[in-house]
Image 1 (cartoon, rainbow, N blue to C red):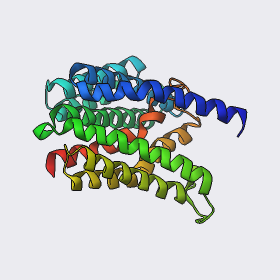
Image 2: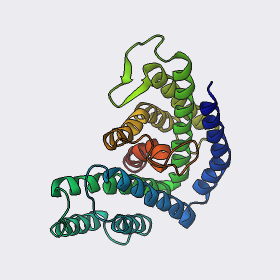
Image 3: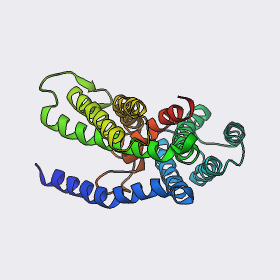
Image 4: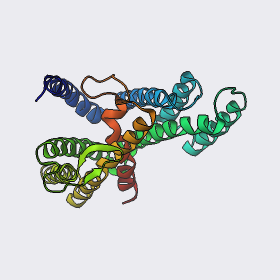
Length: 273
């Protein structure tokens, strides 16, 4: 293992040792602490998306994207207005604002800002609503399960792909966007997610076992998509990491991409199944 890989792995371990207990505490305590931390992550993620968009177009000013994100996160946390009402106001405002822009293409400018604003705010918003508003107090259990399954899928996929990747299935999982992802890594990640869900469902019966297993399967299948969506934007912008905010992990988008992508699915499970 090269020195660079060793340092990177060490940084990942240090961040995990410090960050995992803090995240578990946040999930347990909920309230303004949970809302505040994940709203901060949403603000940082929008900053990173704005940086990516600036490689391809002339998006609206960063301060405006941050302000809109703050409004969205406050609305998700405190139910100030209907989300669709705020979304409508933001869309119309950005359309009018673009009338005064003298740089770039209106289609590219608007097209570069909407993916970041919508994706970041709606996914983190789903996570907030899942933790704070899920019926029958299931929010804590669902968010614990979400993080445990994602972590298990990441760990199993990393070590499974590193040791067996390409040895049995020679075709890559999605080479156009992520040339290092393998089918072996995907299958190990799926096994890790399902195993974590099975353990959680048996030893912490705050959720029905079938709900836990369905969640584990969903996260196992969807985890690569969350990473690939972010890779799609980074590759288009020509950057390796969304930022360097988290040592060994890149940026908020790099570290929480899967959490963001699967949170809406768990929201629908909790509220409608």
